[in-house]
Amino acid sequence: MQAFDPRPVRAAAFQALFFLAGPGSLEGAQLLWARAGVAPLVPILPASTHAVLQLVGGFLTLIFAFLAHGVPHLLGLDLEKSARARFAIRAVGALLVLETGAELAHAPALVLWARGLLVVAAIAFLGLLVAARLPRDHDFARAPVPALLLALALVPVGLLLWTWEARGGPAGLASDLLLYGCVVPVILSMGFQMFASMLRLPDGRGGIFFVAMLAWALGAAVRVLARVEPELLGLHAPLLLLGALLWLLAMNGLRRRQDGPVLPTPPSAFLRTHIVVAVATLALGSALGLWPRLAGPPLIDDLARHLIALGFVLHVTMGVTLSVLPRFCRGRPSSSAWAHATVAAAVLGLLLRAMEALEGSPPWASVSAGLSWLAVLSFALHLGRGLRASASDPGPNGGGLADSTGR
Picture (cartoon, rainbow, N blue to C red):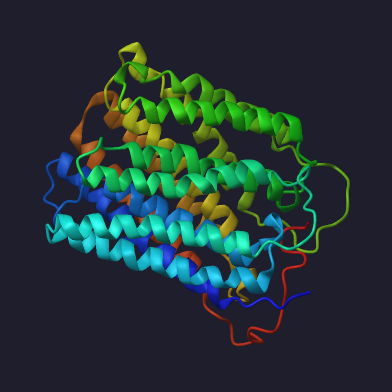
């Protein structure tokens, strides 16, 4: 078995946490504080920039690190060759910093160049993964690789739409494609492969999974098209909800199996809580997308999007990374009490966001913004603590991944 070096995973995770807790979530909080009449701490960036910083700089960077360095067997990769992808991951971080600085400095030409180079960096990452494929057949029946690869291939497309936005294209196309078309499908695909062993569930049902992903993909396409054809707004919701419910059915309702081998590493005490909250918010966020079609409050669409981003994506990311990455990097174990407190803060923040959407009350937006940012900051500090190398770390040639996902 190839030796596992935790350093690239650790570096990519710290990079992702910087964008999640810093420019991403803090800027999102400031946008809400501005809407509530609270003076922002720094110049306000467009909402689309806040979304891309979180989705690409935060969540996709963590996903890239998992695929290239953490669970390369999911794609049938050579661990040594896939380690080269760290250069593309670092380039994404550097270019996002450059793009953010250019926006704050009101340098549109530099913004355009930074976004264009981000497309190149994303393509380079995918190219490095392709070059790392092992010369053997992969078990496509058990690993939902086609859905995962399609979602990853859309990342450069989303960044290209963001580049078009800098030239006057429609706002929100990039963030919608990255959220609905890339991040969520990647998490659903990886979860289908990994949750059975991590939560001690029965094996997933492959046929139902592929139908679920097809429904979700169609819903994501309608959602993105609604940015340029407003009459389509809300029509995506039934498809997304169908995809979410079918995915849950494919996962056997997240019911634990009563028998089977004892796992070498028991499931984390908080992982199931994170996943249950995540799936519930995914279904609710998908269903609420229909509300604007029914002449509901205009902020409901914003609530639906944040339920999926902060409810589903964040909670799955928190649960999996806190359970797995400290073991990968031979760091400190995660705290169950800390993890549950972070979930409580995030859920309360979303509930207050719902109050704002239903009542249009600015104070709710202000408190919701603060709680949501504190939840992300708490997650970043918690995971950062776990990623710190322990005194007994044997170095890059010690340890391995054989049983990290039970596959």
